[in-house]
Image (cartoon, rainbow, N blue to C red; front, top):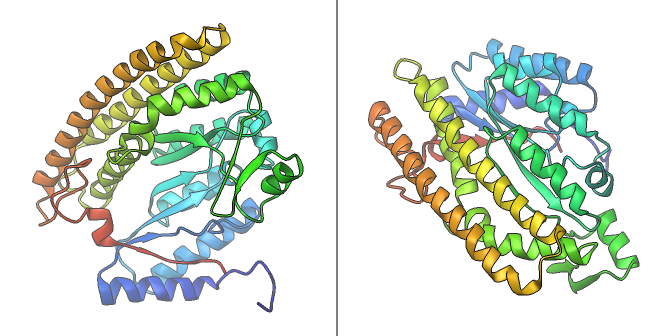
Length: 344
């Protein structure tokens, strides 16, 4: 297409679209899936977010909320203060994909581990809900890198997260590099590859055997709990008259239980491999770790369902909130939300 590769919409156009959707369709949660919601530079973000907030206020949008994505390098106190208090952000997905320096280099994130920790410190200070997905397995991962990422899971357990392997996508520098190294197989529909060492490949295989139901199954609790936590934030913002702070405490507690349990399970697998345990003992390890994970999931899922019921029964708006595989009606966040593109 002609024109510049990087273009952004005028904030007044974005505000007009949001106000129109609010008035014509009753939309009051605006989900910015755009990875370019943040522009390069904290100063520019402060100016752009303030201008959008000013335009929305001037146009009389009324009560609304936003959901956005950010990189750890975007996490600036002044910017995030505007984001929460003027743009009413109730969830920010932060791209904390790895806390290992090697992983950050492999993925070309141009960030530092310290910025991941600063991002968590900031959202904690603002009491702003965040979630993230970690790519702890990549072509260059080492056992030490895995231990670094397990430590990060323990550092920020109250925020829902998931983990998996880096996948190779067409047109990316990483795929090009892996093809030149003759380390890929398959085609554009699905590229596959072996990890950097036999030990890490073994950890990955064991981890997927243990964590598949939690991370990627039909009842993937790691993902479902993100929705329940979001429901808490929706009620916290839009239904202050009936909101119970105990719901937030319970949501954070359940996220922490799941994250710390997952970190323990991953650590058991890594230590098993580091110790050079015989391959014949892998099946026993998978059975033991899987049993512990499933038992924790049963407890957490039951409490999450009860939390969702408590919220739904209190709000009484004629729809049911997400109930972790026990849905009765359209989730509140789907009923009320609409995506808006802010960049081209």
